Length: 126
Length: 308
Image (tube, rainbow over all chains, first blue to last red; front, side):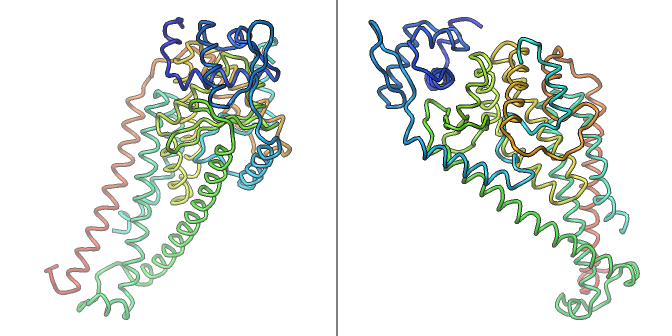
């Protein structure tokens, strides 16, 4: 995977990756930290540009840290998300064959599946 | 004629085994097309056969014979056989119809709930992040397509694994996999034997998206690790364990991880299985179409429009 290939990806995909990195971190992140935790190779200036674009859209917030900014994702009213998510899960959990039209990333595991998966992951991956 | 009507009802029983082999031997994207296409055609043929059987039975009854303007008795096998068969077919059709309506309602409700969830989430590009302690991610088709992922899932994975997840869900959306999943659902309710095929079609869609993700990320091992870690995290968040009996090779997730860890296989002996699938489907289509044409001809004869 080359830098050039990553820089050429649609802007939306880059924004998604940067926002995901911020949410995954859990604490505020400088552009340098985001650059390190990204799964793709982006120039730091690109990361900074994307972060300020996300900030303009109101998706992330920032505070001064040293000479630059540290960014963190904006949580809306904390409860509304939790509520929607919980309502959704209770809605979907009612059906045994729930993941039909929505293509879920992973299906349910049986206890045996869990054992096999843990065996497949290398010790460091678990 | 009875044989012609029985064939479309019996042939779907061969599809589950054929479908599993097709997924084994063909590339996942090809297997997805082939198996979903066959399942829909076989489902359609079996419904057509049931419909023809019901129609024949009805026309044996004097009331419906009069309504159908039959001047001669409809020439069929003995009424002792045809009428109960028609009643059974009508029952089967009613059950199918009811199951289809119920499933459509479930799916619509789940879809609406998912859309509502995505609306309330923070979005960047094509990804919606839902702040939730449950690890979950799915592709939400619509305009525009969205990848919905919870914060718990994002925290489970590292950077490259998150890219694999996004690439996987984007592959679902770009491939229009929700149409295949909907087709699998439809077929599953039309014939009980096609229920087992639903799982194979789902697995084929996941495998196709996994391969696309591995190609996009450029690393099969990273993609495999993303799937495995996501599944374990999602499982940890679930309260109830499913009561399904696992197969020898494990459920769909271990199969996907194993396939990713293995080197990509050159399709082997794929032509034979593809031919079998096509033959099975073609036989079913020909049988049901011939039966329908035959009944149509007999009705015309009974109406006095045609000579026997």
